Image (cartoon, rainbow, N blue to C red):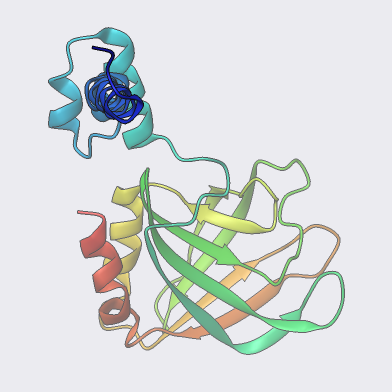
Length: 197
């Protein structure tokens, strides 16, 4: 007796479904370790290539990737902006894959003639001013404190401060001196700092 066409169709359907159920998990197996969320999970991966891919996913971010968390404070006055107009200067504290970072933005002005670093002076209220040479961002439009330890030190220096004056001399323009009201800033950035711990 020949099998009925309907029974053959069900049999083929069952075989396809069984193959699908077995093959899909096998195909996904190499992907699962790469999607690991912690360093401990990456360390447990036996294959060197997969472990490296896991760490790359964990610690590297694409260029221009959004920070995990950030808070931006604007200056009390407007400064000359590039290409035209006026805009506030900004201080942004962000939690990124590399850790905490502070970005001082000066309304699009070009910061460094050589594109690497620039002098920046900070003055808390009427205390003595502190000057340092800091790196600029890839676009050469902002000054960076780009490591967690120095960012924490900067934020700690703001405790008990009402006004922070920031001075910088961009390329092809006069010196800019901007004031930020920072008395509430440490409390505002606390969640960002916590997100990076």
